[in-house]
Image 1 (cartoon, one colour):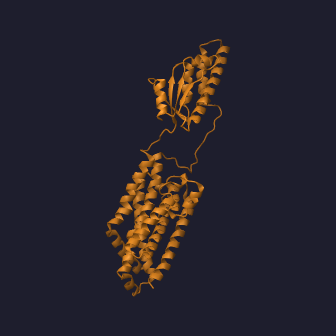
Image 2 (tube, helix red, strand yellow):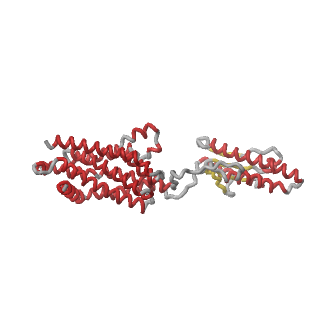
Image 3 (cartoon, one colour):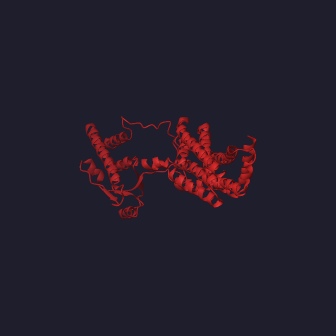
Length: 397
């Protein structure tokens, strides 16, 4: 065991002296996490995703105001009201895309609706806007509700024999649409974690950049193994009582300690600075980090054993970084892709590591949700190590 730890200590000393280690394992992951997190998550906080629709009421009647109330409660469109705008202004805003559509209520609309012969609204939309039909359907639904409320209020007023009761009855009928007697309540499962756009984006970019640059940082560790062979230190080491397995384990533990240290620092940074909830289930996050570090360390050992020069070590480190990160959802979440690409993406161990971290920090799932990703990462770690051992035996013969 002492021989293994001596090799580990020697490797770590050489690796830490290299400035590239700090650059790839800490500086660049933090910088790119912030860059991608803020680029795709904005400044954080809740945003109104409803379609902006201009509103101009030329009638200013109690009935037209009721229509405005109904549209204000829409989950599809958001009324953009400015009394100073003219129809020409609205048409211009719709044309240049600043508004998805605009609604103009003509004069006399309320009186016509009350008499049972409503005047059509003027709806301005851009034919190139794919959401125009959705907007029109939402407006039509509000108009139908308004007309039903007007008819109800008219019947109540006629039975009461008082025209003054119409407005009050209309308000009651319109309010009933906001609070119907029969409602469908949608409750999110406690297994689904609710986050704003900024936190969700950081929960994607934090583990993705951590994993991506952990692979990129393997070039320094691989270079140590390459230089060991070039300087013939390996050959001299093999003449001692140190076995090949001990040499491999010593190199492996050095890479593992390096990667795990990077994960610990970046997870702590993500939790405290970026509000990514890695500590929601601390043990689960630790297990995923250990499995991911074991997998990436096996890849680093494999690169060091296969590379014959420092240039090859760089190439063998950067190519897996781009390929495995791209396929594994480090750049674009696999959730946003189709089933076929998701299946292909899980050929990459990065995809499994991302699943493990995001199941805890973003999706709000339990400890059991990490078992499959951890098993996959452990399988990759064993495969990489065994392949490294086979190659090392051939090289050192």
